[in-house]
Image (cartoon, rainbow, N blue to C red; front, side):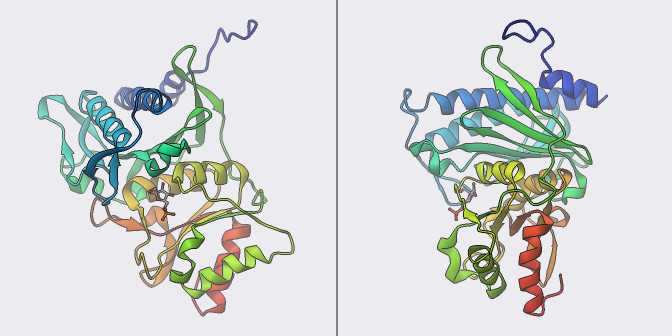
Length: 335
Ligand code: P6P
């Protein structure tokens, strides 16, 4: 390392080329990285370029679309459609799937939330992009209605004090890359990320505004964290990428359960639940649905029945997820 300069920068492109012989997958990751650079630039200049505020439309979730939602979505779609390696795209911002023209299509299907947490953008809170990648089968939307078992790559990009990409290949390690703005490249900064083996910091992360809607075991579990002899801190950003990134790095538990208000949970299965579940599990954590459709299962095993379907999520390590499971057991639920 020359003074402040790395003459052998471990870039994302180098990592991908060293870890896959699939050149189309390399093209896809570079395309995604370019999208994230564009989004990071727009998010970083939002205040100066008057990009705050509403775009005047509503998205598939029924959320008011922010100007940056529309821009980020356009950036992702244009880059992926023109990459030559995608066939079907699903975006949180689009009610219907996007089918790539046959002359530009390739073997991947990508689901993404281009700017997750964007309701926070106007007050400068961290936001992010979340994505999951599947191999094309028929070139129809069914190619994306598959469980995490068929997901070949998943990850997120956090736009915050740093722009940080965290992703994993199917069955692989979880790796982190920070954008170095001086060279415009994502550089490998976190190798083989692991969820803290002892559970990490005692942090519980949930929207307690939903407390009255929760089922009793979830209420009991959050009360257990509050009254623990070893005190827990409450941390909730309300931007999934920020909350999950902190949970992955520091430990603790993130809970967005199915409840009376959201019987299937609130978060989207295909481009929030499944990708985050693969990241957490492949880093050694647990990604549970909690009690959902009569049983307690893994988020990664859920098969979406529609591109915008929802799922509950309880993510953490054995120490804290075990507290939730003990509460379910006390209410006669098999865990
Ligand atoms: P609530 C943002 O809208 C989002 O999809 C996630 O980024 C975030 O974790 C969650 O919803 C916040 O939901 O109900 O707590 O506002």
